[in-house]
Image (cartoon, rainbow, N blue to C red):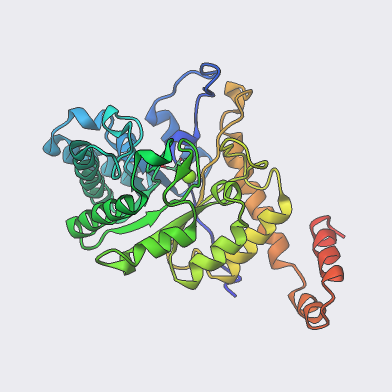
Length: 346
Ligand code: XLS
Ligand code: MG
């Protein structure tokens, strides 16, 4: 038990989003990166996560030299503010070259684009002082299953991962699985798939995962079990804690807001596995509700952290000894009630 872990917190610039959805425009005006960094500092967070083009805007129009220059400048800014870059993720789902997927596109030129851009992401991460690369494989799947060969797609994913692993021998790739959206079905929908894929690469030790609570729920899985599974392989390198109300679109709700008991189980699993003691961060991949007013714009982040800390207190004060006695007596009915009453402050 790592009872005294001092957790460190993180979010990304995209978590201060403007409220756009497929049915309507933004509800809050766009804000600059500087404003977001200032908000992160004001909230007392420790680190920021980046997409490659959060770090270097308009990345596709810039030379390698320019990309490096801007990454170095950003690193100086972050150092000046005392903020760490947790990870960098290639945003491989916006560009026209990624319409049919990135690493698994049916067009060879587009696959090459994805690999080249990912290598730039590794360079940026290195210059920002992190070797952690997050891969949300957004469009690696199909809308129409017959459009791609599933087995070939796995080979293509392995080729892409291998290219990244060889590009920087210190880089670690954390796959962030999600079962659907934007795709009908994704090729790497769960942590089990991600860790199995790792074993096909040239350096399985450097391919791990990131668990997002909502993505696990969308796959019909328990995020706490996913955490335990990944930790059994020492492969949980980051988390995106949030919440999700059932099998709908990806909601990225504040952590714990829908299912407090699941939040308790997730934090308990993180504690039991010593998450955070090897430099891992608690990242919240949460979005403000569309209805959120400008003056309340950062509250979903402050609330997620506050809920995490309150739930942590519940985890640390849970009567584990009593629970073990109930388990020994197979009295799961009483165990169930004990958890409920503990959460309700009884
Ligand atoms: C989308 C993902 C995305 C990643 C970062 O569903 O959660 O936001 O976390 O690329
Ligand atoms: Mg995420």
